[in-house]
Structure formats: C-alpha cells, structure tokens
Length: 30
Image (cartoon, rainbow, N blue to C red; front, side):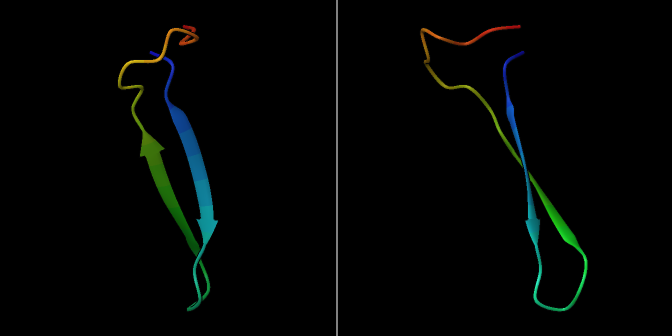
C-alpha cells in the first residue's frame, strides 16, 4: 500500500497527519 504520509505543522501548535492514498500510480510500491 504505497500511500504518502504527510505530517503538516498546524498554526495552533501540533501536527496534522494527512495520508494520501495512491489512486492510479504506475510507480506505486509496497
């Protein structure tokens, strides 16, 4: 499941975790 996990800093202090699922990517690994 080759998903991209993005950790974005929030303004109020803390972290926002955004998981992008691979839609139709030929280079998807795992």
